[in-house]
Structure formats: structure tokens, C-alpha cells
Image 1 (cartoon, rainbow, N blue to C red):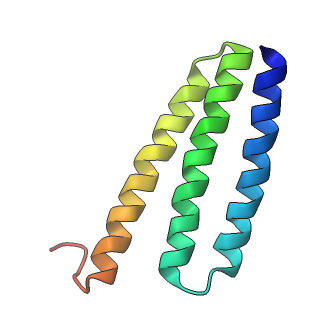
Image 2 (cartoon, rainbow, N blue to C red):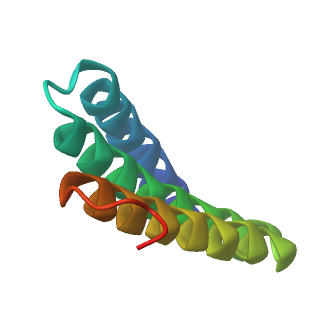
Length: 88
């Protein structure tokens, strides 16, 4: 079971590198934000795999905090792209 989790961890790390490329080279701000969202999902997956392998549950708290921050960032970008101020 650990071999499968290790392989999945390496796959997610490789996919994270692809997302980092999209974040850095994205032609527009929405492309970069989509890359950041996908990167956040992969980070949560990596946290889940590491928490499963090490049996330390506090790592899942890091993933949950990352998801909350990513959601707030997505909402902020949506407000910005719609042309509204953040306090409206």
C-alpha cells in the first residue's frame, strides 16, 4: 500500500511542477489563477497522502487551511474581474 501512495505522491509533485509552469508563464491573470487553484488542489492531495503515510493528522489541517485561502482568493479574483470593489 505504501508503494502505491509513494507513486501517487511523486505523480502529484510532478503535476504540481506543471501547474507552477502555468502560474509563471500564464498569458493572462485568469490563466494564472486557474493554475493556482489546481496547484492548491494538488497540495491538499499531497497533504492527504503524507498524513496517511505518517499517520499525523495535523497535516490535514494544513490542507484545510490551504483550501480556505484558495477559495477566498478565487472569490477575490471573481470580484476583481467583474469590475466591482472588494467591499461591495
